[in-house]
Image 1: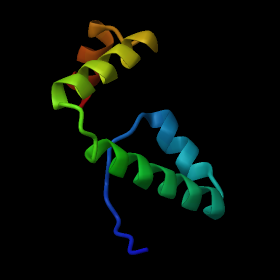
Image 2: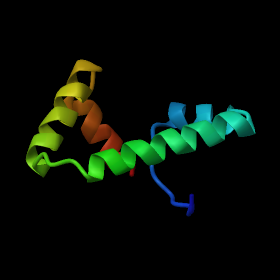
Image 3: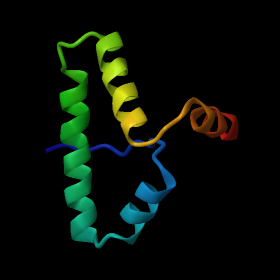
Length: 75
């Protein structure tokens, strides 16, 4: 399998977990992420439906409009 490095923004906690993982764990995480990215990009769902689902999941996890604005202001 050909691989290529990319840079993505993730939550700080996710970045810390990845950095502290062993090389074997990192390899597994990279494969899992690669598979999820391929799955997400090959989805037959409309972009608006995918965005609604992401929004609903974020809200269930406690993301509020205020928190989102704060995060966006930091970027």
